[in-house]
Image 1 (cartoon, one colour):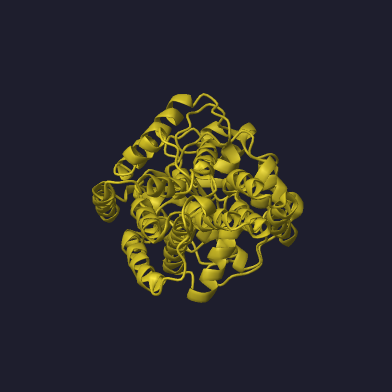
Image 2 (cartoon, rainbow, N blue to C red):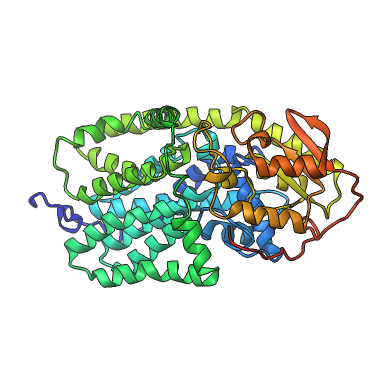
Length: 502
């Protein structure tokens, strides 16, 4: 018997070449991936991130330029993915990107199965793939079922570990770079990858070069200065607690508790593994620690951040469940499957109050404007532009970018001076060049209400008059203005005006 070692290639004989292994396992994982994502197809949209991406994709398809006239604090990979999906299947629904999300989760499960099989054998491969898919929806459905950044980041993080395990530093770096391009925190996988490649004696130069290549390519394909600003340097106040420590702490504990329920069958063996040295798991613990650090980054602790923890948890549980008795593994899988069924039910029955609100507001705005006209939805529901089929009046699709407001933040550090640097100057220029036909104040008493923002308050009092209210949102139309359709991106489409970067 081999002595315990941290090298998976020596800790357990690798099982190779068994006929039919993947032909039996792939259909099982595919069916499980489809089953766990059924709720994602049950509603048109799950959260504002999906709405933001849908609007970005529409703008990009009709002349918008990322980090110039289409802005967000995220890297470009997922907006490009949405744009490509819409180009193939149309923009009327998110079904195409939901299908891509199923494939992303399947790919992650397959990569984890391959990694576990190489380290611990055929049975471990099956266990890792199944466990990952069972816990992959173990959060609030708005976080777990949405086709957003983390879902498309995870296959790349898993691929980075897979390549590092096979002593391919260049490919591992490339995968880590692509993970960063899906979401910045995906770059955290570089820590365990560096450790793994270091133990193999693989060249760090190739690893760093591989990681830098896609990032530099994306910067050059967009606007390098804008790319750096929006993805790295321009989010200082967003990452500050700023008086919101208690709400943030409550959210962190609540989401951790929800995830603990999903992993109830896996946590006992994983915690037991802390007391016993398991061959081939040191890099997995480092992966989990790096992912936990990534969840903490930004100090917001939204539920979808926790998705990054799931791949290392699935692998660590697989390693812990290899020891006898075998009934322990069966019990863990059964408990995890029951928890998965609970979250599936939650996903199918989840309330949709905010979605319905956004639909009602968007429908009213669509009735009061023509397709070519610009609209300003002042709130945190960018999906309203997509539902209404109207052109955004500004590149800033939510009030958050202009005021530093985000979910759970109190009134501290919220206001014009806390927004993205230069954003209000750009907003004034955009609204002067193309005044929106309709402004919808959807703040509903939040800290970013117009009466707390001098620039927006002056705009509304000088050029607009209140014309109605729907579901708590106040509508303002241009005072004495006639119809003046501009160039719309939905459905006709036209180039979006360029302007200064906020």
